[in-house]
Length: 371
Image (cartoon, rainbow, N blue to C red; front, top):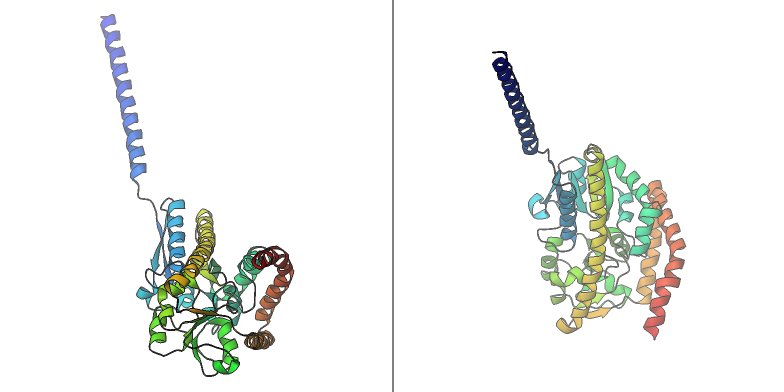
């Protein structure tokens, strides 16, 4: 009888242990499944850009940055892009980011010169640094710190957003031989260059990218400056204005990513880093692609567009441009200490770095081109 009771007790104990074990495994499995299926918190941002839908190179840089953020964050952060076709305010990017309507924007700093003249040098300046010099100034010569200081009152962080390298001087319906040819000329040209040409008698206007061809075609303007062969040929300007001039005004045009300061500061540190790295990569990738596409585009001009006549502004015109540029810099520097500080920083860095540019790239190219 004792044996039967003991046997029953052991069997019951084993059975109970097995059931408890199965229950524990089942609970662990359920917990694991529930954890796997728990919805992941996704941070969704909106970005407004100056460029229209499908705009190459500029818009591609934005898409690349957004895709990298999504991939590197494993879907934790998603950036939705609104083009100018949707938000209808290509030159309103700074205000929209500042006010929090969009967390991010992509545009060019010199579009805000009417709001804050000190933003302008972060895109480019006439007769200023070329792209390698400017990138070195941004990251190692104090440029990023100055840009942060300028944008801070606007509640915005600004980051380099892609460089076009040296831009062409523009498309003209007629050949520009003397300073007199500039008087009364209606031209689309933004930034400080527009101020310079205004002093030489040019009637300057700024027109959104999507309206440039129509304005030139209808005679609203006589000339325009856009970028270079990388983008100009696709716009069709060569069909209307056959004189294509080399550059002087935008030797290193850097676009900007703008980020609402409060929104950026609220991100977890790892997402701040991911976003920063994505913007840096997209910016430099745009520089490389712009250079490539301009080289390809220029090579195609002789074959596909023999009517295009590439010209360089005469020495007297360049001299007058430089004089007007120097006068304007002195004028704005006297009125705005912050603008003065930025210009002094750029000029000092250019003076220091230009010697290396001259004995490295310039000497190499000069020697080889002459041979």
